[in-house]
Image 1 (cartoon, rainbow, N blue to C red):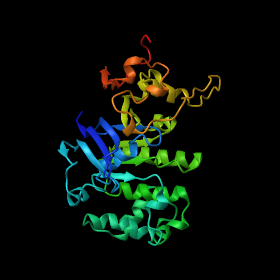
Image 2: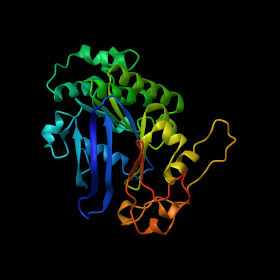
Image 3: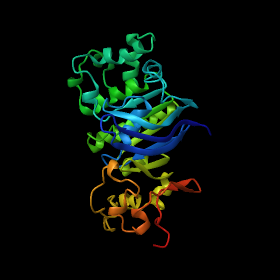
Image 4: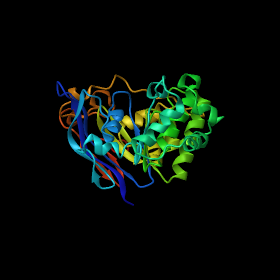
Length: 317
């Protein structure tokens, strides 16, 4: 298989005071593959995704690294060149559809803007069909509605319709179900899975919820304090986590049997710019040893399972 996306040694920092936010992140997504980017708030996962589309906040800049899409470097592309890729070949669904949709503009017009941005015929019939494809009731009426007239779940369906409008090769989904109740969340997950399968699309699903990730992806990238902690097939990550942080995350998931005691990870994650040359997880790790506090562990690979730890789970302490 050929990678559709390659993130190579990406580091991001604040523009003004040069504080490190993301440190040397690398991963790949193959053609048609679904990958989960997992981590706590502040781990750098959303910034990593935004950097792919050149949509970083004004206060953040790329320090180093490269991003390739279908073998072509897009990290140094001009905004006008990236505009031809955004929404066309790579699309993104955001966490909060209410802040992503213009409250003063009708739904149909907002979807038509995707066509306009790429100089494609924006007939009303195409927009209505897009709304119908994401199972919005009465799509003809929805075309002329405003965002506030929709529920949170319906607004998220509109965002999915916009993201899928031009049949992108890669979909980035940034915690799109976080603000929804469980029933609606399940509907949105099934909708994204169906759209992905029908369009043979690659997926990067960004989340802090390992339960959701286990349903949506084939491979998981675990981030901690701006660095990659572990990468592996979703089954391998859940059954044989090597990084102590990943082990702690999985141990904190509520089990259906309710017979196993939940684990908790003491302390709070450090700010990425305060870590320097040490393991980012050292202060919270039950397996920490002297070398963890003075060296930064490199990402090492065993049979396509990678982890950055000197004393991984499953090895002698």
